[in-house]
Image (cartoon, rainbow, N blue to C red; front, side, top):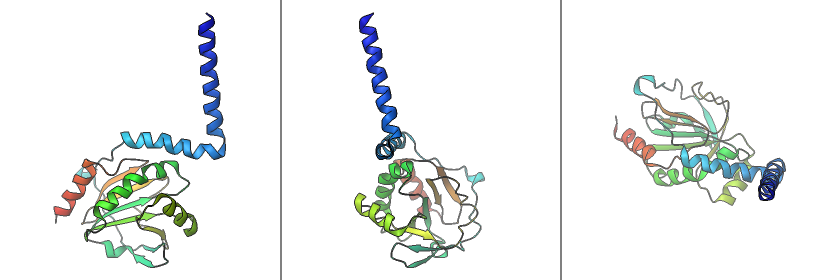
Length: 193
């Protein structure tokens, strides 16, 4: 009976410490990122059935890159496009970034693949984050309203669009983007047309 009581006390202490760590602002974010990294390992984005794919209605969207250079979304028309809406303060976003960076590295030199990582944070915050994590993917800020199909109410939100402008993947929440299923999907989209 005494051993059971000690065991229960130890579990209660561990539980209290875990709750305290989650409540303390300095430890909350790293713990949430850690938990979401576990989720990323389990979640693989899936494609939308062909007959349910929605087309992007407009390519009239202006953005600006981290160097202040304007980008016109219409220049990506006819390419395979991955758009990720994210923020540095978002634990699920931070958790999926290593897989997105790896996917970006696989296709960064491919002329028919475009990556748009979109954040509304201050450029200095983004640049500091990118430098600290050694990420090289391009980050943009919206200058105009994005197309209505990208109805982003929570982040991370990621879209994979085919060359004809159809949304092939629409994923809210963290996922592993550098996996065989996503790579095979991109390869199939590149062959189509």
